[in-house]
Image (cartoon, rainbow, N blue to C red; front, side, top):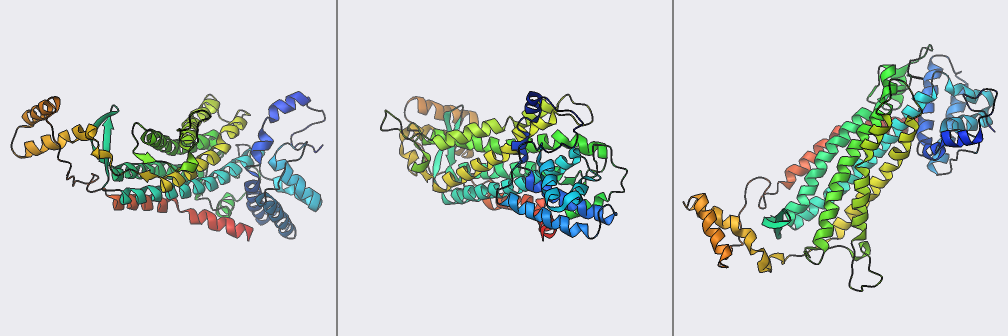
Length: 445
């Protein structure tokens, strides 16, 4: 069994070790390649201050790149008896390079090591989430433009209210995603700060060059105060959790709408058949299972920031083992949200829209406001026009004019989709992803 970095000359009870390690080995697999990237930057800096020899650095970097490739191929494993990803990487180095491999830990603690791993992992995942949000956004805008002239009922209190359109419905969710992306951008900017050099939370007596590791890893800046860098553990995950939750909220609402509109009582849309399932006893059923699962998964994701908050809520300054548990709810959340984004984009691309909904006279009353407004514009006081139309509806005499003319910004006749697209473009440009991507490419070159 490999020694642990903190182990003294006694064995830990096996049950205590099982309990304290928990799912950490499993969770650390998410972080493996980022642990390697962080180590590459760290040892490059150590060489610059004389803690690693000029002849040693190329050998260490080459071997770390080999480990990175193993991670990329999905073949990285944390062996039995090895506590975590940091120990596994160091073990692999020492097997190939002897005691030289042990030098990579100089000037850092596992505390700032896991912090930088989490930051690099989160940064990468936020990039992927942003890309998938844009894919869904584009599908929604395309459908909004395609069906901009197809009217549908709008509802308040689940009662038929006023004319809406599929242009408005699809476009509303597109614009919702632009606001969600602002949360994501803020989460990215808070994430993209370098904690390396904070060590166990109180700095190091080594003359570390923190700006150098910041530049090598493509961070926008560093977490300057070493105590705050450690205080950021949990806070970063909570803030990112809020960003993921707001996207999940948009998806859950869209999924519920689609399930409702797909039902026979509405029959406004038809979902792709491969995204529905049948009943074991009712041959007529087409259940919207994929959207129901998206709704459930996204509702679960909306609890993420609260879960993180409750784990870290009453911790004072410094590191505590409680923070380990955050990984279990945080790391898998990205994969769940990305799955939901991909599935939603697929369904929106394939969804069929019914264009004759308003032929049914049950929807005629939703044009009542149009008639009231027309009478008011012709000089009749609004309250009198309202009463006149209401009495006509009660008497069964109301005959709607379905040729409506809404021209103001954001209405049925003026969707402003071009402006919504410009908003999304502006937010995406604000991420400045290329800086981080270029830094990682240079480090691995």
